Image (cartoon, rainbow, N blue to C red; front, side):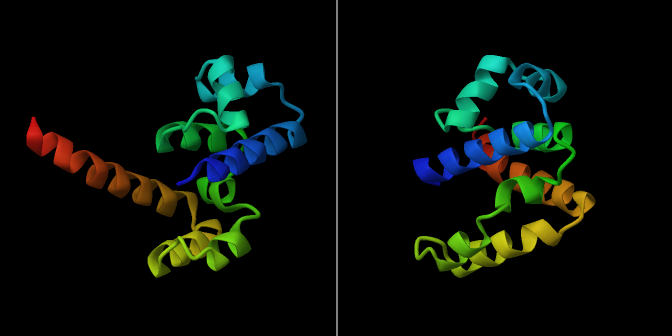
Length: 120
């Protein structure tokens, strides 16, 4: 992911937070993160983990798919840097259930941590 993706994600989080009439402090407390960390996420200067994104989505009463893909469906589908698989996933995320997203998150974390666990 490039920096502009994180900036767009941060702007989306800030917009959803404002739409919910929450301050950064309230959202941070509900997501169990520091308000200063949330502020940096909203500016795109910090790259949150999937776990943190899941907690933010939950605190905003959104699905993780909606938080990640909201408004970016056209962008992701037309961006040549995305492979076919990434485009397909980005198009399907908003339509998945929260249970499906939890399963995907678990799978991605296991795949990501797998090589690290084998090295230990």
